[in-house]
Length: 178
Image 1 (tube, rainbow, N blue to C red):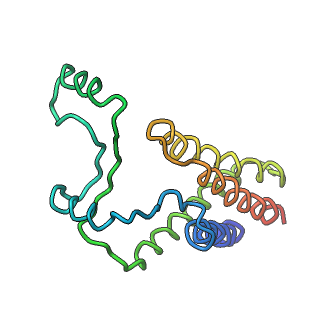
Image 2: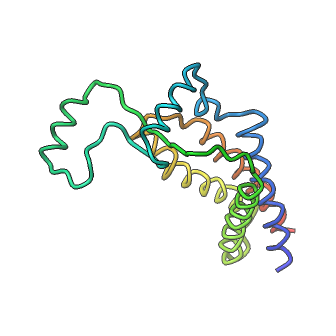
Image 3: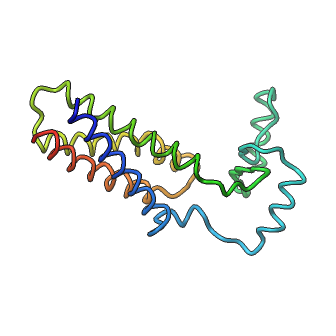
């Protein structure tokens, strides 16, 4: 139990610190937070025309039939499109988000440790490579899949998958074999 607890705490903080570095200090994800000098005009337009939520533009109204969808596809092909995440209020209180993020990081590492503890005598390389596999599975099934459909950047997420889960794998490979 002690190995699992210490492994979880250290591993969770490794991921948490990696995410701070990735999104803040080094900002691998800068391509997802680009500046536009038209931001005030765009935000004003959004606030006047949208309820808070996430939008894919263009699309058809709910309940539309196949004919409406086909007409939209024909009309929109080759035209601009957008993914919009609109919120009515910019909240700068990050405390709750940081706590939630850390709890999720701890839970993810605990679940990985739980799997490792079910395997009789996993060695360093098995733990390290399995941890990397977890990172790749997460990367391929969420961020990379989204880039296939929505043409966003995926390299920062690949760096995250290899970096944070590689470090966690190295830590757990050493710690769980002590």
